[in-house]
Length: 169
Image 1: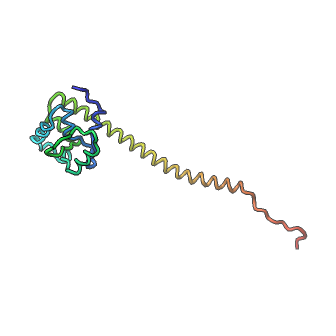
Image 2: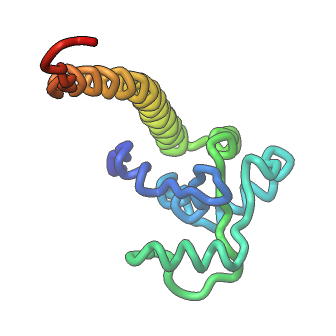
Image 3: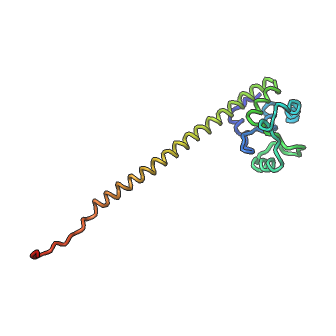
């Protein structure tokens, strides 16, 4: 068995219907089983896979995905569109696929999803800090502008007042 790295798994995670998912064809490849066998195992245990754990791609989603993936290994005719498994669905797969390889692969997949969540969280924290800095900068910009205006007033020559020459009446 080739070592399944986080990088290999990350390349097989797609964003479909605003969810991070992996496709049945990719999972079957990682688990070392035929896609047909994986789908049959899922159908025998369908009560474990509600819609938020697994869904089948519609024709448009599948065509969009195929057009994005130039080096698709899915070629040929398909009877049905692939299934997409969310993180919870992939975790549920470990309860129906009990081979040693499936367990090891599932562990790596779960680690990958955790890593992705951590990266997203760090980016969110960074974005929040940047927004706070922008707010502070805007406030300081106003202060800096006021200081510059005050300096300009001090630099401008004072208005000359004409003094009258002669006697005061």
